[in-house]
Image 1 (spheres, helix red, strand yellow):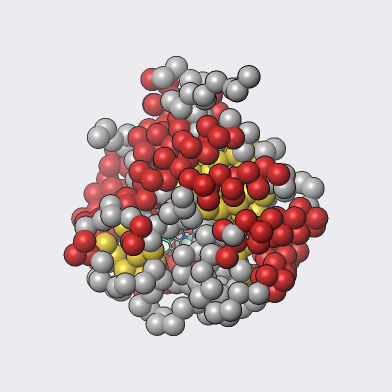
Image 2 (cartoon, rainbow, N blue to C red):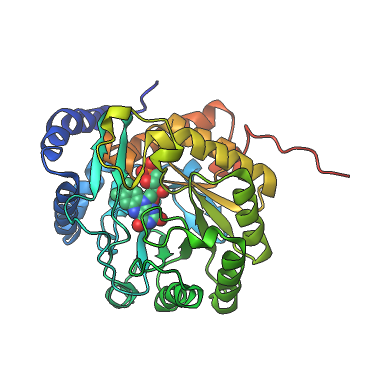
Length: 382
Ligand SMILES: Cc1cc2nc3c(=O)[nH]c(=O)nc-3n(C[C@H](O)[C@H](O)[C@H](O)COP(=O)(O)O)c2cc1C
């Protein structure tokens, strides 16, 4: 594996890998997450902190600029939903070199998440994964939207909407109203919406994988959607091909702009992790166990939709090669969390630097030229 660091990036890597990460990993993961968030908030709150972050981590190159569904991205690598569940660190992401950030998941109602606060995340370092059992904890769409209203964001912001995880009994009307409440609250905030129908950690499962429920939800969303905002639907990692096809076809039917592929992987359907690291038997895994299956889903959806749906590829991106594989398989944009936690905050710069090199090597002038380039479309039926 080649590295694409310059000297500064290499130094940042060694400091993170051999000094900061061992210290951060002394805290339990949920505690570490909260402390790093508080540090990020402090760094992002003043011009000097943001300047330091920019000097340390920022990278840009014109070949990474891309236009997707009418939105300009300065690079295709975004923060994935789940890192910033209350939308608090939007001043920091541009300086870290992200091209965009997806906030949330936000739910209609205030949602405490699953019980066991402080013990809902588990590191699996040999598997390069995190087992997540959060259950959609967030302050609720009302409070978060009033805090973010009127704020100018330096990069495109995605609003990830999920259904409140408060009730073990599924009720279709109530659940749809919950999603719509978030969409209404964020009508004038952010640049795109993601509808998360794939949280693996909710009490009532994933009821919108059911075609009738999904049809009703997407019809209701289409009826109230703001004209100028793309809407993407986020799929689970462990669906059958038939389930994927039904969801993707429903997205096309209801005029959704694309899909986010994919959410976390449940260990019962995924064997790509080191077995003795699974010490908690609820939740689902991020990172490397997801990498291969996620890229396969991207390849399948790109071919089925012939590139007509936007694809945001997310799952196990640690290097520029991982990112490029997803782009050449059909992803227009990318997101990540776990790679940043294991490799450090300089990794977004390294991935973007590497993408520039990989584009050049293949003779492409821009990211959009490379999308799907190693995933030829099957001939059309005549
Ligand atoms: C700690 C954590 C919390 C997450 N919470 C959410 C969430 O609230 N909503 C969501 O759509 N995805 C959530 N995810 C899934 C990520 O957005 C992403 O799909 C997944 O982690 C794969 O990307 P990665 O391998 O780069 O981490 C979460 C992931 C992690 C690691």
